[in-house]
Image 1 (cartoon, helix red, strand yellow):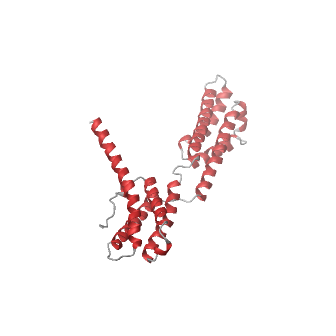
Image 2 (cartoon, one colour):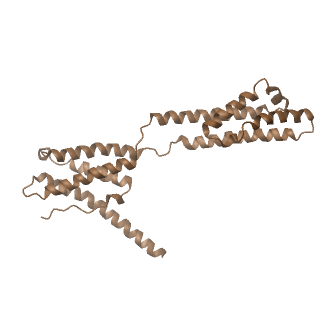
Image 3 (cartoon, helix red, strand yellow):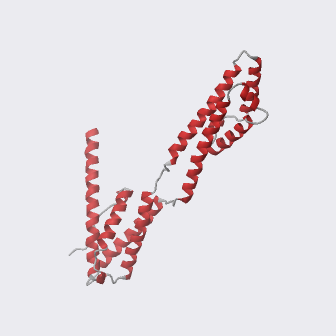
Length: 248
C-alpha cells in the first residue's frame, strides 16, 4: 500500500473553510481508539491543534466591526446638523433689519467662529468643542443674546445631540476594552504551520515499516477530510474557469 497525503492547497481555503477543516480533523482523530494513542509527538500535535482550533474559532467569530460604529456615525451626523442649524440661525438673525438683533448675532458669530470647522473635527475633539461652545452660550456673557434672538432651541439641540453621541461613544470604548481581540492572519499562519508539520509527521511515520497502526489510521482520516476540500476547491476553480470563458 502506497502511503501518501492527499494534495490540498489549504491557502486557497477561506478562513471559515480552514476552520471547518481543522474541526473535521479533530473530530475524526478523536474516533481513534485510546489504546492506539501511544505516540507522544502525535498526541502533542493533536492536543495543540485542538487547543488552537478553539482560539481560531473565537477569532473567526470575532465581530470585525463593532455594532455601535454605525450608530455612532449616525449620531455624529445628527450633531453636525445641529451645529449647521445654529449657524444658519445666526446668519438669519444677521439679515435682520433690527440693529439690536444684528449686534447680538455678530457677537454670537464672533464666538462661534472661534470654534472653526467644529463639525469636521475628530469625534472627541468635536465633543469637547460642542461642550465648550454650549457652556459659553449658556454663560453670563452670551445667554442674554441667545434669549434675545430666541435661538435657545438651537443651543439645546446641539447640547442634546452631543450628549447622545457621548453616551454611544463611551459605550463603544467600554465594549472594546472588555472584548478579546484576535489577529486572524497571525492565528491562521500559526495554525497552518502546525497542521502542515503534523500532516508531514503522520505521513513520514506511516511510511515506516512495521509502524504502529495509529499512523496509517490517522493518515486515512486526514486524507478523507483533505479530499473533501480538495474536491470542493477543484469544483470552485472549474466553475470560475467556465465563467471566465463565458465572459471572454
